[in-house]
Each structure stands twice: as structure tokens, then as C-alpha cells.
Amino acid sequence: MTTAQDNANGASRRGWNGCADVFETRDFYLACFLRCTGYELLDLRAEGQRKVFMFRDRRTRHEDVMAFYGDATNVRPLAFAATIKDMKGLLHNG
Image 1 (cartoon, rainbow, N blue to C red):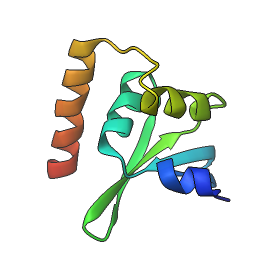
Image 2 (image 1 turned 45 degrees about the vertical axis):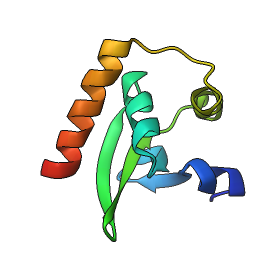
Image 3 (image 1 turned 120 degrees about the horizontal axis):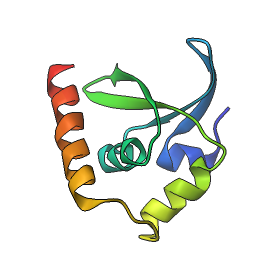
Image 4 (image 1 turned 90 degrees about the horizontal axis):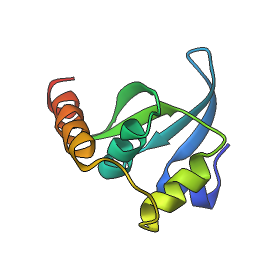
């Protein structure tokens, strides 16, 4: 259940591990932004040599993603920096 728009930014899935909706993205900085804004990181899976971040989806996800790419949102800079460090650790050690 993906659309062209979802393929550009990630994909939405149903039924992963008992979750109603899951959003996937390969974009590291989008994943950091989503994590920093309270999205629940469910899993990190390998796709070849790349990793795919899997989040519990929200009704506002499309607007949140568009705000991120449109530079129309705010996050606390130190929290974002800390999230980047945490997510890099997860990539390299997880």
C-alpha cells in the first residue's frame, strides 16, 4: 500500500508486528526529525547495505514530512543533535 509520494519519502505499511500502521523511511535526517518530534521508532531493518527506519505512523505524518522538507518546522537544536548521535549509534551498533 504505497503511493509515488510515499516512495519518495518512505512507505506506509499495515500490520507490522501487531501495529496498525507503520511508516518506513531510508532518509536518515528525516528519521532523526521524526524521532525528535515524538514518533515511536519501532525497528531498524537492513535492506541490502542500507537501513530502513520503521516508525509508528500518525495521521499527521504527511504534513510533518512536508514541513520537514519545506523547512517549515522547528525542533530544538540540541535535541536534534542528540538524536542524530543516538541514531548514528543505532546504525553502527544495532
